[in-house]
Amino acid sequence: MSRVVPPTVDRDDRYFWEGVVEDRLMIRRCAACSYLQHPPTPMCPRCGSVDWTTEEASGKGFVHSWIVSRHPNEPDDEGRIVALVQLDEGPRLVTNLQDIEPERVSNGMRVEVTFKELDGVKLAQFRPATDGPL
Amino acid sequence: MAIRKGETAIVGIGQTEFSKNSGRTEIQLAAEAVRAAILDAGLRPADVDGLVTMTQDSNDELALMRNVGIPLVRWTSRTPFGGGGSSALIEHAAAAVSSGAADVVVVYRAFNERSGNRFGQPTGGPAPPSLNWYRPYGLDTPAKMYSLWFQRYMHQFGLENEDFGRYSVVARKHAATNPNAWFYERPITLEDHQNSRWIVEPILRLLDCCQESDGGVAIVVTSADRAKDTRQTPVPIAAATQGNVIDGNVIFNYYTPDTARFSQAEYVAKQLYESTGLRPADIDAAMIYENFSPVVFYQLEAFGFCGYGEAKDFIADGQIELGGSLPVNTHGGLLGEAYIHGVNNILEGVRQIRGTAANQVTGAARVLCAVGHSALILGEA
Image 1 (cartoon, rainbow over the protein chains, first blue to last red):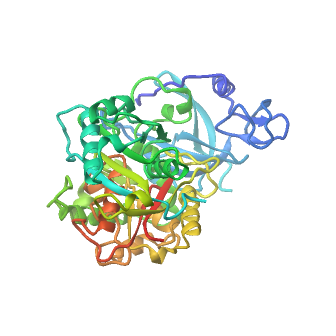
Image 2 (image 1 turned 90 degrees about the horizontal axis):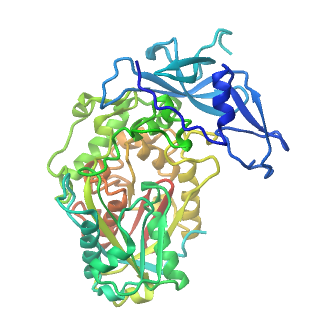
Image 3 (image 1 turned 135 degrees about the vertical axis):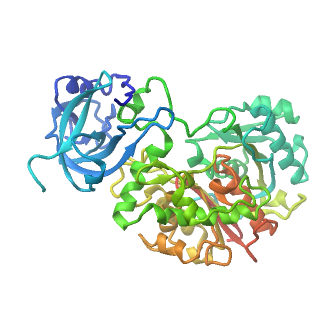
């Protein structure tokens, strides 16, 4: 089992972590100009609005880049695949890949969100998409 | 516009030895390096009226004044980020001198980064909110954080880890003939590189990673006019600038449109070349920050020394070695000499222009010192 550092939830990202508890991948959209921003900011860089709406993302995207994370101080036989996923909506987010071995991972592969508790922390994870290649 | 060419110069450099266990406090390292730099310039502590260091430096300006005997300081500033701001140190100092805010500015950086707080180790404890997007997923060391960026470059241009190893071999080759380098007389082969352990699969092996080092360095900046009266041949600052881009990130550089390119370095390069009228072919040597070997590849391309995706061939062809078209990290870089947060690269740039480097590039007149997020050109432009 991997060690997981829990998030320190604050005002600007509470919507995301509350969504994770409900198995929903939430992203923020500017209430004034509809700009999607992840990681979130309190002010919209496009129009200056500080009002946001949250919406559930499709949960689908592709692998932009990926690595295998191991722990040099506490050897972790499992390792974790860390991936930068580009959502179909546009924003990129860091996550882990589940249900796949490192040698099967490729840049551009289609993935979909899944939710999993690791070391007592529930996280948005991704796995190979069931809807096949794009 | 970058710092205006010809108005300022570097007139002194100083350093401690580079080690794994300095046996003294960080403020002592800073004081030793600063005093050495002031004496190198032929100046006195009382001539100094400006101090610049990194935000991350533990050495308080007032404490430094009490050690070195600098009676009065009217300009201080600190640069953003860590090593990403190391060339910005010179930008800050030159800006202060050009504006009249200070006459003689000392830039310093000193730490016990191996025997004290090691940057390469996993960070423990709860994540601050800004790291909520990274730490819970297992990005707990700089090597992992940067690798998620590097992997896209490898994918885009078809590199293997062995390609990065060819840079490491050059860095260690240069260090092997630099008595100042930790890895003096200890070159490596590509086989050694490929036999070193994985740090982040399939991106970085041990020998792709910079050292962790103890030591201090300092640099004296003053006006071109005043530089004429100092002890050393002045090294002109042709240009110095930063490159901050929206959605850019120093460590988690995942959000720019094309992550197989180094957007910040491209912005820096454009400014440096436009403000000096120089072109890549005018640069005689380059000191390129490499906390990890892939950063050299990104920057060779961003600064136009080769085309996109061509850095691996540029390096494999020997172009970055002594005698090549662009000798890179002639002191051994942060892999071979030491990791003094990148600032030791600027000292090597100064030595190259002075003609006093251990691995001297014949006739070096213009040297690029680049960190991607900030960079400068030394020499006449």
